[in-house]
Structures are given as C-alpha cells and as structure tokens.
Length: 287
Image (tube, rainbow, N blue to C red):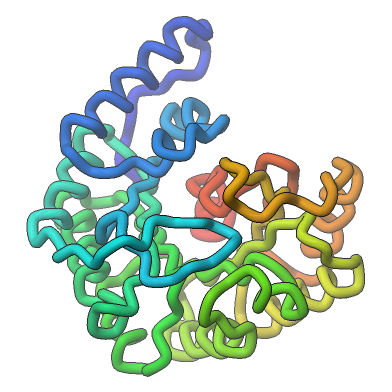
C-alpha cells in the first residue's frame, strides 16, 4: 500500500515551488536535518513534489576524516532519544511516500549506532503506514548481530555506497575497505532475500572504464539490484576536486550496460546522487 499524497502534476512552476517551500519549512519546524536543504541539492523540489524526503540522523559529528566528504568531526555528541519520533512526525507532515535515512559514521557508538537507526525506521513505519524506508549505511556493520538489528526493523531498501573503485578508495575514505563493503552487501542479501539492496558510484575521481565495469559486476554479484552512478561534485574547496567531468554519453553507456548485467533499477547521470528518484527506483522493483 502506498500513502496517497496530493498530486502536483499539472501545476504551474510557481505553485510547485510554493508547495516545495511549505514542505521544506515543515522540515525545519521539526528541528531535524534535511539533507536536501543542507547540501542545497538541485533536485530537492523534484523529489519533495514526488513524495520523497531525505533525513540526516545521529547528529553532525563524524568519527572519520575522509578527504572525500570533509564532514564535521569535532566532538562526539549524545544521540537524541526523541529523534526517531521527530523524524517520523516530519514524514507525516510532509506526507512522504518514501523516506531515505542517512548519517555520518559514528565509530564512537556501539555497532555504529545501529540501535538508533533501527528505532528511526520503526518509528517511521509505525506513524506512517505504507511509507517505504531506505537506510543508507555509510559504515557497514561488521557483525551479523548488528546487521540483523537493522534488518529486523524491516527497511524496504538497504543502501551501502562503495562510491569509487578499490584502487582509489583508500585515498578518499578513512578506515573503509572495499572487500568489507562487498561482504556486507552479500550478507544483507543472504540474511533477507526480499530486501532491496542498493549501492552507488561517483565518477570523475580518477577511475578508468575497466575499473568501473568491474565494480558494477562485483556489486551485482554481491546481490545489488539497484545502482546509482553520478558525477563527484564537491560542495567546497576543502573536498577533493574531480579529476574530470564525465560526458553525458558515458553515463548513458554505464546505465545501459548495468541494465544488461541484470540490475532491476538504475539511475546514471551527472546530477544523480544516492537518493535521487529513490521512490521511483523502489517502485520499479516493488510494483
């Protein structure tokens, strides 16, 4: 069942922007962090009007020092026990049909904070029956008990983005291992065969064509049935800069090839991010 939301198809651009603006205001009123607003995403009005919302949970502290992201890593802060319900209430106010939950890496917390993540998923489902939930696991749990905690909360989609090819990953990410990522995705697929498994790549970081295809193949073999491919677009000079801007035709080719491999849903383009068009990607598999 899908929660019905007012249809914005056919409205003029001015009215659509007004609706999106009201939705964004309701996010701020809940005192929770909307990824869409925080990164000034160019797709946010499109996603909000489609019934998709993306929330950052577990605070602004990041326990890692990746050159890719340059996230905040000052001091650990306690988790807000009210956050799961606050997020769920924001989802209800937005009338979102699909919710993406993401967070920084929290190595300071037991199992990276999986209990809190699971609580947020449960709260969204309890307060918003019929709304699907996608959780992006940046830090992949290394033990099956932690993975089971997440899976028992019944998210519709588990996402873990490898982001780049194995050769480049150690240069960009702190304490991240490609083999561990593949193993995590395989474990998720083995433990719960009906969950949608998703991953993503960002291009323009120095990878070559062979490496990209190899990663696409590894992810598919690990059980991924959803894939996003986009361009690395840094939000500040502190982040690593792209080695090149990938041509649109290359994204088209990667998208076509991944579908030939057997992926059920793929988005490939310069402005594609992990959560872009996530509702429609889920529908392509679920319906």
